[in-house]
Each structure stands twice: as structure tokens, then as C-alpha cells.
Amino acid sequence: MGRWDLPPLSPGELAPPIVAATRANPRYRFSTVAGRYALVGVMPDDGARRARALAALDALRPHIDGRRLAAFLVARAPRDDMVDNIPTQRWMFDPDGAVARLLDAEDEPAWLLFDPTLRLLQRIPLDETDALARRIAALGGVDDHAGAPLVAPVLTLPRVFEPDLCRRLIAYYEARGGAPSGVMRDVGGRTIGVLDPMKRRSDVLIETQDLKDEVRGALARNLVPMVERALQFRATRLERYLVACYDASSGGWFMPHRDNETLGTAHRRFAVSINLNAEEHEGGDLRFPEFGSRTYRPPTGGAVVFCCSLQHEATAVTRGRRHAFLPFLYDEAGQRIRDKNLPFLDTPGPPA
Image (tube, rainbow, N blue to C red; front, side, top):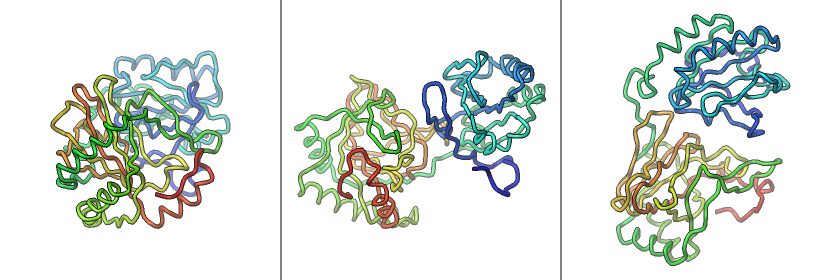
């Protein structure tokens, strides 16, 4: 679906929700590339014109490293001259022209340059290769794109759990041992859990009712009122009582992702990350790539609360083991979404 009667995508506007097939992923989300500049080229069907555009892109290779700047090329169907070079360059295939329409480039192919928050910096006609080269050469560092220091819109809150509760939650995890934790994906119209190298973590779900009640009480007293004050969200529902462990011996990371992009997770509103032993490990901090390279690390018993639609990552633990309690908050409107989507879960369960 196009943009109806809106004007063409203009500077400052957020990129549309693009989902397209690539060679490796039938449902590649463009939103995952946040945290770096992204150059999107909507390619023409005309082979000669496309070859000139690709030659111009080749001349920019010194600037396209996949970390500061990555290129994404849109075409209707794969051809021999369309080569992926991940992470610097990736082709997205658009057989019905839906992506081109979302980018307002169906009738006239163009280059679109997005900043690390995936807001449009500039649209450049496909054949104006000199203008493209000048704009790419003038890009600053990822952390400098806003012209001012960036801070992620998160709430850092100390003293949510008492030290004794933190120790008992770690002991609960250690007594049971963790199971490898996967990620949620929509496959064939259903949400399923899959193991993926983007995540190296082990989890234990709390089943003891007394401990669950104690955790819920601490959150209700020490966290929920501050979430309502700072974020104007009144949480009435809690999803999962989960103690996680990121272990340096096995990598201990979770690469950039968002927490509400599947049918089975669409009800989530805010994620909560409560450190249980912040002094006992190195690495394992939170980072929000859309808002720069700064990391966030609450103290033991403290939380970072953030909207589930923000891209975030848990950086690799380089020494020791990080234990954390990781629930999600939602409300009655979210519960209605959850109820509606339960039939699409691979293993539906009762509402949390």
C-alpha cells in the first residue's frame, strides 16, 4: 500500500515500514539497519541505466563500510549483476513495486539517504551521481549526525529490587540451570521461537508462586509508579518472570533488535532490564543504536525501562556472567491485542 495523498517522502520523515525479500531472508525488515547511515537505491529495470548507477555506487566504496554507512538496493527481481556484499551492500527484491511506492520512487528511481534513526536526510535523483558523491563524502560520524549529543529516551531507575532479592533470583537460576534462549519470528503466518546466532543467552522462568508474588510486589511499588510518572503509561499487565544469564564463556550477547515486531509480541509496550549483579561482570550493557554508541548500565537492583519499538542490543559480556530479570509491561489495550493474536502463536499459553 502506498502513502495515499501524502506528499513525497521528505527530509526529517521516518522511513516507511519496509519489509522485503532478500536472498537470505524472505521477510527482511529495513528497520533493523538503524544505528548507521543507510543509502537506499531504487534501481530501474533498464539495464544500462542500472549499470551506471551501480558504477557510481562502486566509486563510493571507501565510504560504505557497513558500520557507519550501508547500501540497500531495491529491484523487482534478481539478476546476474546484483551481488550482495553483506554487511556493506544488500539487495531487496520488490516484484510488485510495493517498496518503491512506499519510497515514492516507483515512477522515478532515486537514491534516498537515511540517518541512523532512519529519518530521511536527502533524496537524490538516480542519475545525479556527483551530488550523491558530495553528500556521502560530507557525512559526519554516526554519533554526530544530530548536531547535538544524543540520549536514548529511556528511564533509568535504581533500587527496584533489594540486594537480597537479587541474590535469591540468581540462586533460583543457578539451581535450575538455564536453557538456550531463542528469538521470535513470524513464519507462515505464525509466531515461532527459533535459535539464532544473533542471541547468546540462557533463561529460566520462575515457577515458584511466592517468589513471583514478591517480584510483582517490588515492581508494583518501586517501578510501575515511576513508569507512569516519567512515561505516562499505566502498566496493568506483566509478561514473563524470567531470569536471564549472559555468560562471557559462550559470548553472552543479543544483537540489535526490537521487541514487538511479531504477531505474538505486538502487545508489548515497555521492556524492563533489571541488573542482578552489575559489579560482577564486564560488558553486557544496553545500547540503543538509533541514539548513538552510548551504553546504559543500571546498578544492581536497578532497571532500565524503554519502549519495545526502540532498537536495542545487549553488548557482549567480556568477563564473568551477567544475570538480569527481563519482563515486559503492557496494559488492557495490549491484552486485547494479545488475546486476538494467541491463535497465531506456535505454542499458545495463558495470558501472563
